[in-house]
Image 1: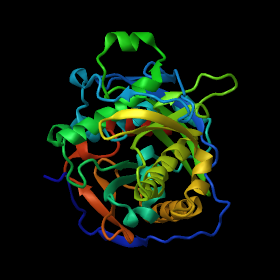
Image 2: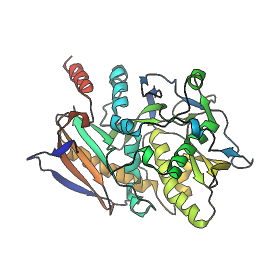
Image 3: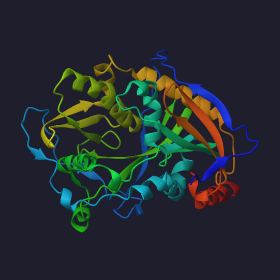
Image 4: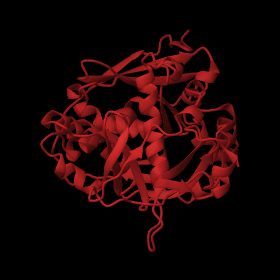
Length: 377
């Protein structure tokens, strides 16, 4: 049962935002993201304000010049799968906890307009091209405005999603392959982490960065796959994103890879200032024979036949302008807004809703109380 109902007398349907591919203002860019903090979550999702779950790259292979034979199926029998229902329900609560614990850091920043996890910005940046993806993704983002800051998180209940146990064996296998590839390339910064826990995809390390786009400023968190240990480099410029990809056997495979996967991965890396992407190319049996290292900055030119970073950024500016104008200050535990993006992927709709259950709110009562108390001091 839905935890939200239409708010009476609220002008439920807000103007739509039409998806446009504007290529003007080609100099528009995110200000170089600055890491302002980090946190770790263990395999029970307990939060620690440190880097204990970070992973360091132990090997960056040489771009396919050396043949590999990495079996991504190894360890699947002992793997501890995440509780997807609980993780989807937590929303941005880990980020809110970090903000509560690091209020002194936040006071040193310029005003912040938006707070969210990286997935929100990835959705927005890729939206102008979603309709032509092979498997376009519909999504909904929950939004509220509290003390003139807009908080956002993806709605894990939309569209209807399957728990891991409901996925096919092939889908479960592909999920494990991604984790196993990361384990080949990285090792825990804290050796005790590997000694005291089973292999799992529940624990993780998140960076918290501050960045700006035009007149809007953002605080966002994102899970980090690995970090390089090189002199002169510091977060986030030493972070590496890692992906697996079926070998590009045909021109159609290459086209899909450039049109869709590299667009999504560019958005993920660009959001946090991660300069590189490591791709493990596998066969259908899950054996990686080669890897390739891509520079995030090179991807837009490499994929210019399929997408434009200028179009993505211009639409993102339109999107945040639209929200800033439309989202009103409310009691965040009682009222929020929903941005929905569905077929035919030509526009986004904004709806105001009244919460029937406070557990569905973006913010927690503890966070609201802490912010209110800090404001009154």
